[in-house]
Image 1 (cartoon, rainbow, N blue to C red):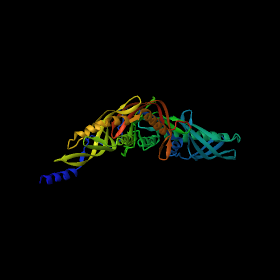
Image 2 (spheres, rainbow, N blue to C red; image 1 turned 30 degrees about the horizontal axis):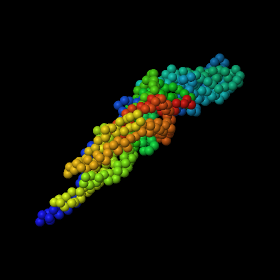
Image 3 (cartoon, one colour; image 1 turned 90 degrees about the horizontal axis):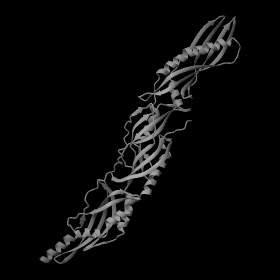
Amino acid sequence: MRHVLAMFAVLTLSSCALHLRAPDLDVGADRPVAPATEPSHLAAVVRLPLPVVAALVEQQVTEPIERTEKVGPMTWTLQVARQGSIVARSDGGNLCFDVPFRGTGTVTALGGKLERKLDAHIGLCAVPHLGPRGVLTLNDVTVRVQVAHSDLGPLTKPLFDGLAAQLEQVAGRQLIDYLKTLEIPANQAWAPLTAMLSRDIALPQGACLRLRPQALELGQPEVDPSALRLSVHVTALPTVEQPCAKVPTSLADVPVTVSGDLQHPPTRLLLPVGIGLEKLGEEVGKSLHALGRIETGNGWLEVQGVRLGTARDVLVVRAQVKGEVRDSVLWIPYHRAVDGEVLLWGVPQLDETVVRLASVQMDLRTDDGLTELGAALKRARLTEIVEKKLQVPRALLERQAREALLDIGKGLEFAGQRMPVRIDTETLQLEKARAMAGRLEVQVRFVGQIVIGDTNRL
């Protein structure tokens, strides 16, 4: 009977695998990299094309002008109206508009009559001003009238003089009054910039840049030959992620203020660069698997693979193992399969040449409390292997950061349009490393200039 019971116990025990349970430290979440608490500052240039400004002024339609006056023996009659498109241009830093007119002028005197087709332009110039609400107004409006004519004798001079006077007094005053009250919604100039900055910017190898704009500060507009040009100071909390977390970026409205004296200090960028753990674990997994069977006093273990994660600012290596232990019941030997995980972890540390794990520790749990398993793993020097293999050269990280900047410098695309980016690097250095949100993060300090937008005066 005792022999039968022993055989039953052996069959039962040998059919039950021994599971190693690593402590549950890994929070494992696919979250975006947390931005640095220190804000970063970028410069940008946005442009409101002059044809767009002219189109807004086109909405003002002056009434046709009809005048008849008698000067001595002469009577002249004038009929003119706006005709053709308004053209906006730059003149000495002012914003100017050329408004075309066309009509007919007639002079009668001493029974004679002279009629001519007339072409004229009203030129209006103003100083553009951006108000605190981001609305563009035109100040200090001046007017000048030009009438196209040829020397057709003394009778034509009163005709052209009268035309110029009437255009200045009537049409010119209409346009001046209109431009003094005109409010141009200039947000269409920087709205594409805000939208672009609020979206993920794709980088090579599945990475992305998230600029996270927090505020825009605008300078007063400058007039160049093709556009109203606005300097913008962008406050942002940028990060680089690899891979890019599949979490939508918030497109919340970015507050905008206007400055009378906008300054662009050198860009000081503190950029957390998040590096995915999958590739980092490949070399560690190969090295641990290369150990082959790790002999214990009563069996063996073998590392099948590893998974990397993070928990509470430490980098976690979960090593999947399998093996076998031997035991006996009433002197009858039996074998039990072993599977599960062994946990190794350490704190990322930035040295002069590498990012490595410091003070790597190991732990495992089993219902049976077989301490011989843990002793065998320690003899196999798993912690030393992990610390040696789980290293990222500092030069590699610096090169990746520079390549990311170079890729951004190729320009950013939004709505099918490419927005140029100029990057001038003074210094680029790694400051510290940490484990966060399922990634290895390295804080990169950039000092230089990053200017988004076309800075040319075309």
